[in-house]
Length: 351
Image (tube, rainbow, N blue to C red; front, side, top):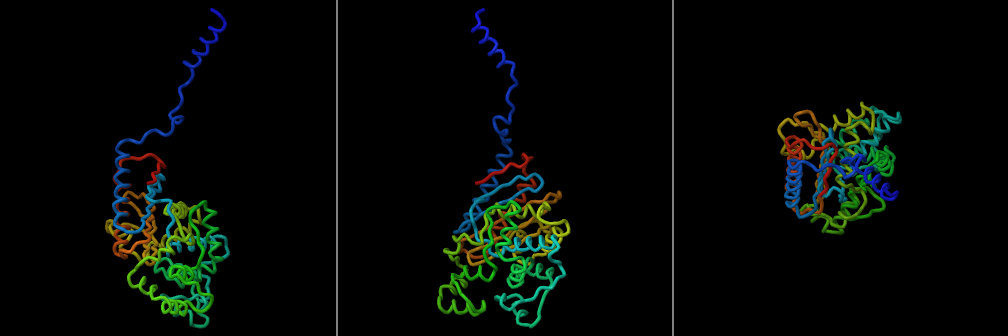
């Protein structure tokens, strides 16, 4: 046998005897047909609910045991509205864990921070103050804007809140304003001085369209496309996941955060709206003209937990319609994770 032919034979023999490549070399194995069918059905349901709005709907849900995530418009930016308050609370709890703040510390109600509604009347009382814990309850349970802005100031301002979120590895969520200035932007006004009430009333007198938007619950389309104070559904989902997994603050702070959110008084027709009676839900809503949001953690009957985010923007059909979209999406996700066949760990789908 000639030398070249010997080399060819040995090379061929080596290829024959070499170990076969693993399945990972060709990528993850295909999903079972039952799983593909269940995912396709869920995505079709999300699309059907989104069609109920004349605006844009974003949905992101996650099984916190397996990490499986399903999303619809998950990487689209949405105005957070009051849903941003979960980020404010996170920053406050991080200060508590660092020893820079206590739940029973009293914070002064600075009249300069008063806006409309809620506990605004308390800000005119000299020396008025409330504990950090009570301010957190007012912010997360009643969505009180005045309590929120006291906490935003104590948190170090919007930039400090964004820095806290970014440090957790969450991208796609930014806080640029306290609530008063967020509302100014939503109204389309840019006052330089004066109280919130004075500025809002002057703007409504100067521009009747502001009042029309309020009365008819119409979106301010210019505001809806601004990048400030926005989040993608997936980014908000990542933030809620970090909280629930205990990666954001201590066990005691994590428990207190979710205990407060479990008694949320707003948005009863949203994430909770179509779930079985008695389902444990800890959530936070956000609402503006043309905007309806809800984010939270839902416990399944078998003890597993799922994180949910549903955002609606640029919608002119009213809050009842937006609430229904959120409730329908929540129930579809609940049923999917509870009843769908076994799914691969961490598998994700983005529509």
